[in-house]
Length: 197
Image (cartoon, rainbow, N blue to C red; front, top):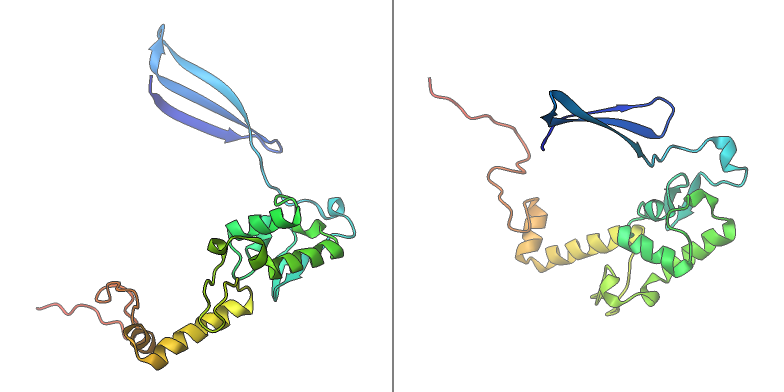
């Protein structure tokens, strides 16, 4: 039997959903209905009095403000150079719960997390690093924070001074990786198509 109609209504103030499913088949001249009670995991913002006095609403890591109301793995992704996979790996290296709120970390734990971000390159395999075989140093490094922006700017400037194809495309402001430039990404004056009368 296929599902003909599905109606879902929320109960006010509860974490449950009542879903009434009406099936397409008729059973003895009556519609067959089923009520299902489903528990929903809602991530509501905790109240200020539940958080405590030592809760940090903003954490400072790698020149970035992290939101203390987010889970630790999610809050770490606000740092440039730290994605979801890197954030979970940093939590594993330090032994912190990636799903606990970041604001519950003490100052010692925050310092341990800061050191774990800085020493990330020594604790993971080289394929997890975002800058392998760096041209200037020759080492496998993982750049975070402002270093990401500076290294990107240095790479683009190096291409421009070499006057290679990619550098010329960067300098002229065109697409670099072979995308279509006739129809999409056209900046400047917007001119419509002139119609013949």
